[in-house]
Length: 639
Image (tube, rainbow, N blue to C red; front, side):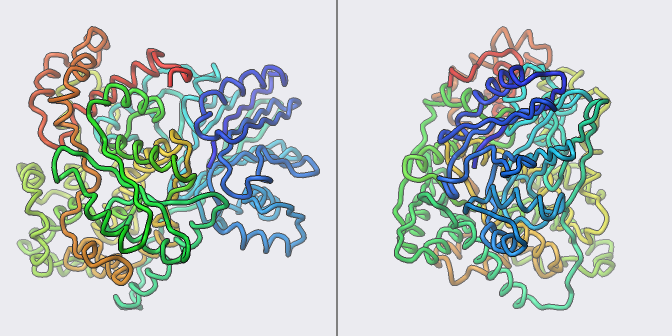
């Protein structure tokens, strides 16, 4: 786990490149406190910078790493978990690999297989390789978007980095809000595709590679999607076979994710996902007591799941650590988090994730977590809500038989009790548009702009860009076969990368490496091939996953039906201990002069916010982001 920066400016000399790289590196020191390195190919205007958090082969994994003949140089962020297997294969092909660093394995994998090397990696990664002989940069990002990659390009200059703030520090990118990105944020609380909240700053999308070819005429870019999820349904096996093989894949992934040359621990919420990872890791590390880290709030039992986490810790024999987060600190921590985040994404769970990461950093350098389980194994209540409506439609119009993978109304009824606490969601969904097309119905479930649009000036939503049209391109992809695949596919492409962005920034802010073994791409591919009427049989959420870990987790966790994610008492804070801070920000002169808000409606929004609402949260994060990045309020030395 590390961070990188770099640029190509063929008009710049080495001294100029060095000055820019130095400025950029200052902004990502938190990503790699163990070491710093630079590399320049001055004749071509190429400059690299790297901050290292030493995890694998700390002694020999220094970056940028260059082959002995000087032909290839790499900067890399992440971890290649199958590096030992690839190392043996590459040595067998005659490559003189000297270290046990996954960085060196990556470098020689490119030498051996070229651009297709990414297809052989199991892990999380973003990297850039300078291929001197071909005057070419080859860049890639992992399949699910666990590690970040940003760039800006104008035909003559290319600048890139692990965090957007490093691009801004280069002086080559000006901070300006992106109107389409803003509409995405207000609709989904994340940006779709390659967009960010900044004009001219582009995300390299998950599962994509990019080649930058240098010539006398400038720099030409080519992006390529090297991976996407295939939904070629496997109808040749029964449920028991899928459960058995899923169990084996999860065990193998956890085993690989335990490869580390530094102390390792795990996040533990008390839910099925993190508990499964913790129990498997503890079983595999026999004789070594795993350290686990849990966060909670004292505002009520709905915000405190430590009893479940402690039960898992006792069952697995871990060394248990916990922290309670206080709302009184919101005025101090939230501006810092918005700085680390680069752009606001997702919900207030970023706050407890940051505090738990800080707790972990006091004890270990690597943590495992259960991120991705809800998207992969069908764990969100909205999936069941959407399927209930589809089942009703199929029963009324007698169309259920037309889809071989449809879930019937009869089969789903026994599991509807799970929705008894989601009545407001059902009321909101069914008040209009009942039985419309699946894309419109799921969009209504995830669209947050209805509660936000009246808080902004009309210009914000009248730019000609349609978040729904962008959503449709993903949701309605050919070959998905069923609504459950359409929903989970969109979440893999949309909300999951946003949650992984939070995971990356909160862990890196604490200078620790976060690993997500449930997001091994082999597990993702396996789940996609399972017939929908097996993996979502009767609307049973996480059914196959639960059965695959039945004998791994304590019965108390296996039988849980009240898990809510990581709820944060944001509404209690914004109406109580943090109310003055919220009003100082949202009722300020700067908000009135910003030109994008409907100021008259904001005070009402503050006072009328419902429990677990995200309206005030979204406003607060957006305004802090404007102040930090667009207005330039906060500098690296202020953190």
